[in-house]
Length: 339
Ligand code: UDP
Ligand code: MG
Image (cartoon, rainbow, N blue to C red; front, side):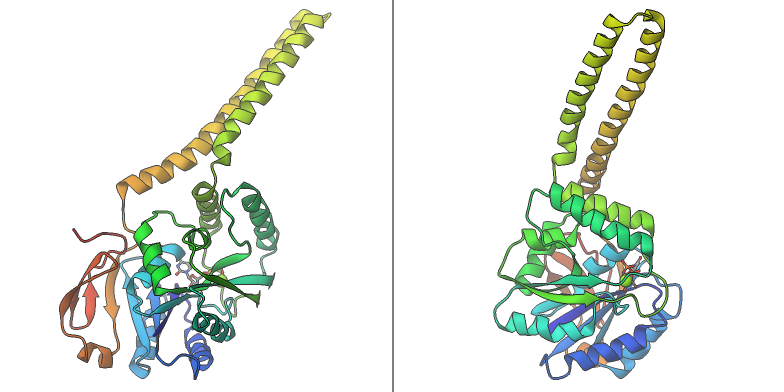
């Protein structure tokens, strides 16, 4: 069985159209499939629409999160719930085109355990983002200590082995494209042209994108930490230069005043930069130590046909605990291990 995980946050304009396109793309390609829609605390009618889809289509599983956890929290809850032998991750706004799914499944059937969709081109309505994405990939490509395919997001297929490995890592601030490359396994790439979203506005805030960029860099590079040494060397050179200027100056009072002011600012900004970088790493270490879950699931709504086949039970899957009653798993905590 193939599971498709789709995070949903206020996508009422697109849900029905998206599900139709998904079902069309999978028709005749996958023998058995389910689509796990993760409702990430939507405040519009997305939840009602998803339940409506489920009443008409037995392939639909709806995961309801306890609040809005953000894109990655929703993805991790979906990965945790998906039961397929392979799991496809994609956004629900047509930016990841459903027409690519048959290629994913074909590569998987040929033996690939991780299939990554790499963007050949990218349509972006928001001009700032279309400038920032290539800049990010350039910086990340230069900094990363591990080879990670650039221009790839969450859009991918992972075999059950890869999904279980990813969940077992329990990284609190996961940069999914990085971890997906890091786990290894037999990989394949499919290329696609990324379209603009079909309707509505982008739901991710600018700040959350910056945080994600820092997750990528801090997760896969120690180079920013080593920057302190480079800054130290530079500030040593500056100190020597100022010292030499003062020695040869004809107006010692003016030169000394200038030199002192300038070096205070230089040192101050270098120290602040180093501390800021340390803070980025330290904050993530703190998150990891607290070991809070990626997100909390309040309900899993499964289609009735599958509930009938599944008696109430306590399920321990992927090392996580779920109490399953009447087909609705409650209190699932993606990321909390069963004792
Ligand atoms: N999304 C989510 N939770 C959020 C924000 C977004 O589940 O807090 C979903 C959203 O509904 C969409 C996907 O994540 O299916 C990607 O979001 P968006 O299109 O806004 O991001 P972008 O493509 O602009 O990076
Ligand atoms: Mg999008």
